[in-house]
Length: 335
Image (tube, rainbow, N blue to C red; front, side, top):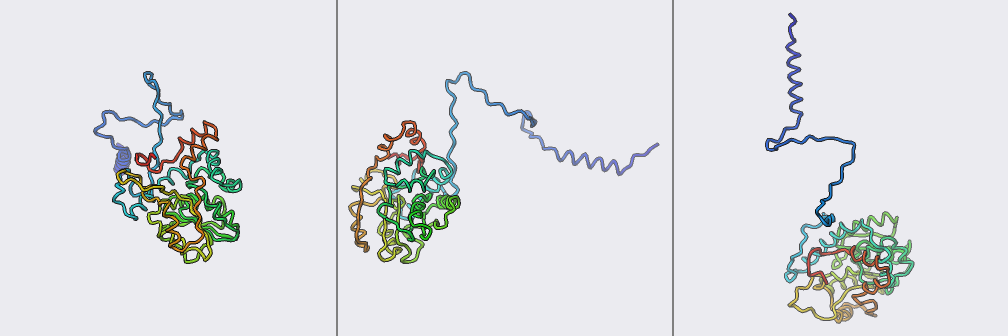
């Protein structure tokens, strides 16, 4: 009688054991196990409900900001100090960078708006398809009068649009450095520098109240919108004075208050740090600035409503729907 090899039996048993262990364990709580079926056929679209009058649209949730420690819509701004305001704005604009930097908006509408604010045909050609990413409140370039070869600082540089315009005016022998509290927007701006292959523009994370430049660094300082959110305006203007060379210039586009805020109203954070227009010249002259000029052209808050009259209705409606909401879900910002 042929004897079975004891070693082959053991080997077969081991192989069977390995095969058993390789199989995924079945869930003891499942009433029915579903086998995964691989098919070359495309997945079928879900059937529409025959009783529903309208299928709900799928709305893409905004991406979570990787830079923000926590997004808050119920902050008590009456208890904020300067550091808390800075963190609040940094977090908000990091969120904007995550949800906006790679999107494409309505360039036609943005171009009309910027032209109304005084950006030239040449400026708009420099900005190009990034026009809709402009976050400013006006146009600092007309009064800045940047000359070839100058060193320019852009405060609150955002996605870099004004820095690129400044660089085109300063030329290859000039230099532009933008600073911003938002890591996300600085990262997006640096990416655009690479895409545009610019050698005379740089962006850094920096605080407008504590600028990372030596004394007498710049011929000209510009800012378009970012200066609005600086909590301590006199300190920030003092930093500009320090950073400028003797005889240097600054041009700041900034939203200001025409009257004091009613303390009984729960104002949004941005308005709480806006500067009073009536105090601007006094602050500047006390620091040492001379030749102060306050330009209130294009200062109306309804400029967007005027622009909508100049573009096709469909384009205006689409642009309204694409507006970036800085502070989502907070009714204090519906102003």
